[in-house]
Image (cartoon, rainbow, N blue to C red):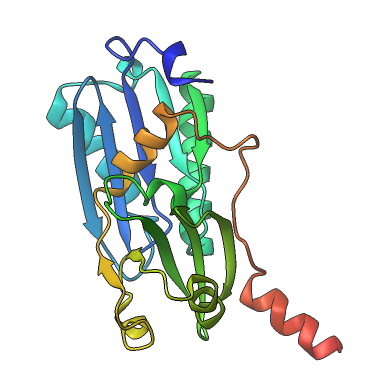
Length: 217
């Protein structure tokens, strides 16, 4: 799929991202309409009401939507599953086209800088991150210190929520908040940057699985 293959003026797109503390919904109908809410407890009870609110405020029904796009992660395992399950349910129930986008790639949109690094805290000094611009790094899970080593003396713009704990280690670099998350999902889709498979992007093993494997060693 390429941007030129789409009739953008006719296509109505509903996108959402629930992989972080921000639950984000966007409807595109030639303009971007964003709806977001923040929670520390996951988005199982928030995503569908937010989608319903977005549709009602714009005067649409789900039948008016042509395409669904969902953020596939990385991020919160629970949030990833909630988003994908919701997307699959809506697509199956309404026979809509459904696409998935890497949630790191979507966070790189509308950020200016020679090197743009969308990033999420993966705990224990690790991050989910990718790099775009003068330094290209595919989405990965690894130590933040290793990422800084790869940057060397280059200056980067880190994009993400709740990254304060990394700022002292990354003096001289810039930290900015991402724009509306689901809007970035739509922009990535319009650029054809969709995943080949509609599968969760975890990039690391779940905590319970990791602990089980450690006990077996």
